[in-house]
Image (cartoon, rainbow, N blue to C red; front, top):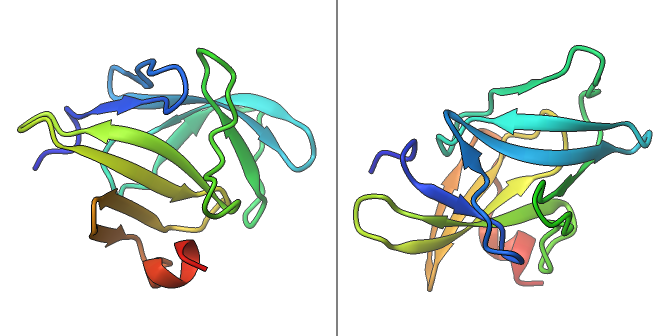
Length: 132
């Protein structure tokens, strides 16, 4: 399944977060610096783009907000992760997409019903992280 053409949706306002070749988020660092972050829509690709003056320190926690409705995208199940919805372009399947809010942490989880797919070299056991 090509992840590039999927729809990524705010769980609160249902607004589309993907624009062109990026997912767009409003973010705020632990140091209270704010900036737009544009991430790759390919699940497991951890490349991102931001303004040169918006510095992200490795290991720093970053809060993600919907750029449309300003809702906090922190997961209700684990505050170290953000969660958005993904609709697969090929068959319309819907998933919850969890990704780490820690700069440099490469862990992403794609969840639909009881099926979990893990991505990234820092991914841990989903059950441990989300079903405490």
